[in-house]
Picture 1 (spheres, rainbow, N blue to C red):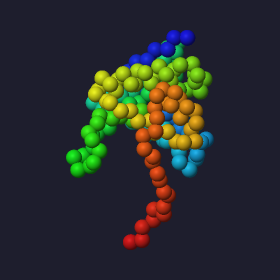
Picture 2: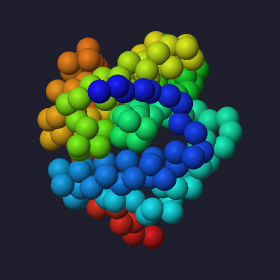
Picture 3: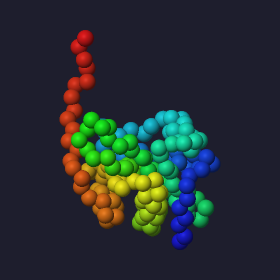
Picture 4: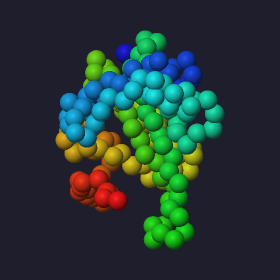
Length: 164
């Protein structure tokens, strides 16, 4: 099976929407209190906007036999402001999606390798993959690709109502 990875184009928007919604459905199964299935039109507008001009997001697609079966988004992050203690470092977040019928075939690995190359070409020296701990498959995938812990993200839910 031949996998080709290329930069996404405007004509890929329907496939990108399908991938985002499929990914959302998988995540809702993990925890419906954390994840949701976004509005289809909002997703379409997002991808059309990203692909219409200069963007801080690089989108790559993976094709198998001419069908888009996966995508990777590389979201370029701003350097920390001068007042913060973090050393300046060009960084990016990465998000990958592979359709269920094509998992385990090397599609994710091909996307990740191309995304790392695209990030390096843009001067990125660190890539973050924010993974929900319950998503064991994604943790395993990124760990096997050399990603490891870099700090701990702690959170606390609180009552968001404000008495005024």
